[in-house]
Image 1 (spheres, rainbow, N blue to C red):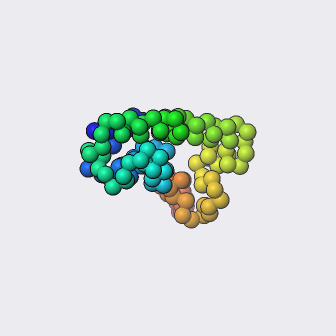
Image 2 (tube, rainbow, N blue to C red):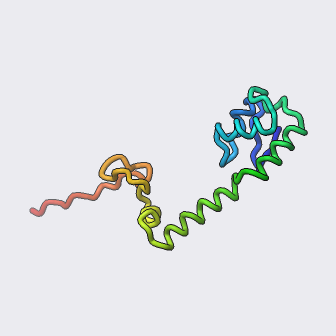
Image 3 (cartoon, rainbow, N blue to C red):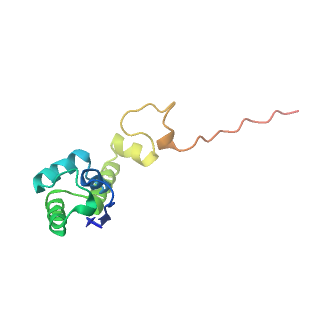
Length: 124
């Protein structure tokens, strides 16, 4: 099993579609990496030699920010926005959509499940 950047790549997938399992590497990035290393994108992960895995590991470590480093950088960027109290930072803090989406409807992913405010009981 190929282990790159702390992630075990699935053996039955082709390497082109297995590399995006690494946080920070998408499909187009995987294609660029494979072209740079010189590996055929259709080869299965199980068929790749140990030397090719080490080449992939080197390229990803040197030229890509992935997994823990990338997650840390994203969190630091969000924290910076919150500290300077810009609109995006405030919306991150409140748990609202950050990029200008409407919130009167269709913001359930960001706002969480609907919390109904109870109606008052009628007095007799």
